[in-house]
Image (cartoon, rainbow, N blue to C red; front, side, top):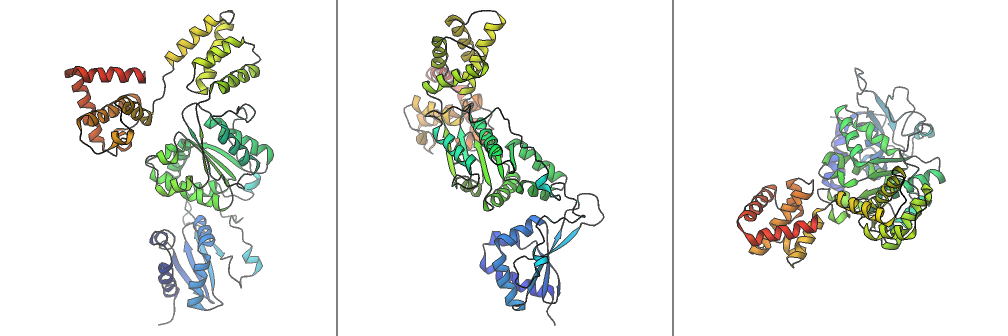
Length: 474
């Protein structure tokens, strides 16, 4: 029996399988079909252009060795790309691309661009001249470095952001992950980097998107069977900014597609900027392989601004709005609103509004009223981490003890209280609360909440615990 495309390819696969990880083999080689063997050229069919790019980028040497072994030095490999049948054509369109890494392919063939200008390639993202088509960056020009004031709380993150803006993809800060609590300026800094890059490098494609929107787009692409188009589009971006990346938590499909996009961008020297409300080490339900990539670059924290920085922020805000205000009032507001910048600016806007609507002069008394109302009405966002810390401090134990497996009564009660307050003050699911408080399941959290309710009615001492802790979270 003579050699066939299938027999040659099966021999190649046996060799490849011995030389790479099982998961990689399953993902990148099992879906390939051998189509024909002609003039020492093996044609293989791959599911998408993305697939072809990946093989050429990562496995070209392995393919060359395997094929040379079977067909000798003159061997050639040709990819047949089966495009998705997105547009109701009766047959999916296929395109032949010779492997660009074979010695005896003619220069014309070798020069076939990855995004071929084939008129039949009706892909909404990979279209001829895409580089000339403006991709709207979705950036807010008001969020720039000029009005992102530097202080001890943000110096590292701001400096890293500036370095990235000066040389996107060319620093070791790739990815740059900016993390911190609510209202500390993560989104502002992410936009500022993008705005600066657009200013310095107008030809670069910059895109800002929230992780939530990214997920919605991905779900839509799966529904419409255009997942590959979705991937191709994101592979064209030079600077990708994803806000609130913790939103990908638990969404395995989106995480998987983001993993491939991230790898492609990173390997091609493109810049990735991420923001999150927590450090990678504290992220729940994010795949390990993604987390490890988040740690490749720099994770920079934004902390609560200190008093001096708060004063600078207020003065800068007033200056930009063309409003003058007495020094003692600025100091009063800065002294009493410590939580975050959003609240700080909100209070000063409120003060300006009160004074102009009521034609009142801005006095210290008016400032006291506004700040009091503001602090009272601004519901502080409480995280599960914060709840565990407060409960642990109250019972004079560390968080590790609270989360431990021990069944000592006072520790169990502290743990149950932490679960009870997490359910009361956060939007997290029972499963998420359980996994963050000592890796328990949702049934344990439900039981804890019922136990706390029962003890509150029957145990006077326990009721005092709840009252004391409630004051700390109020």
